[in-house]
Length: 197
Image (cartoon, rainbow, N blue to C red; front, side, top):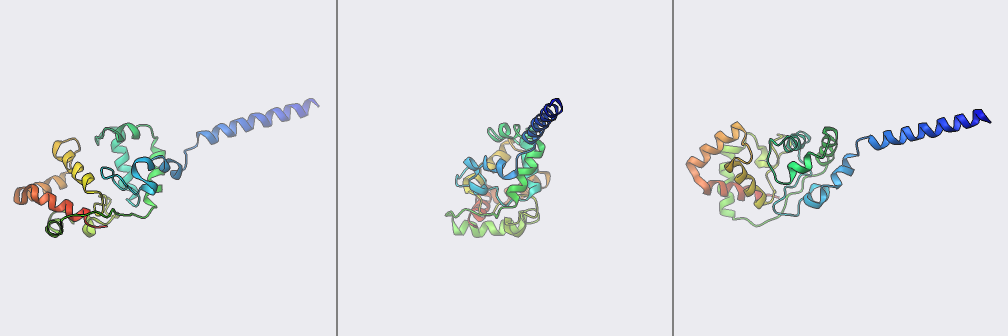
């Protein structure tokens, strides 16, 4: 009788220990990703013009972006606060979840004439990093094609104001483009990217 009681107590304690371990485990990427749906949309397909679509972006790009928000290297009033709440393992799990989703661009109206000019500027200044017209996730530079135009505009404003650091290569290319084509050239690029689905 006494032996039985001891065994039952040991089983109960091991159950508590296993339960605690299960609770401490990293939540699944899907579970974490679902918490992002309020802003980034279901499966990372944005429906808000100031929010990027993140479903279908590369795993490396998503991990880097979240780590930059977490450390404050990339500025954002909201994302820096949110990213600090996740562990590195949770960031990896949710990045893997979103990178496994198909990328779905947003349909929006742009100036066809400006987009045509933007296509030429993209080929000359941006194609080496943002491959295939900005549609490729494989280059780890982020998908630009089909992102909301206001989001692209705000991102460029952050780069120009210094709120977000422009990568060295991008800075050089953008300076060359702005010197020759000015703000109109940048608007043409945005129309080109936003005009693709």
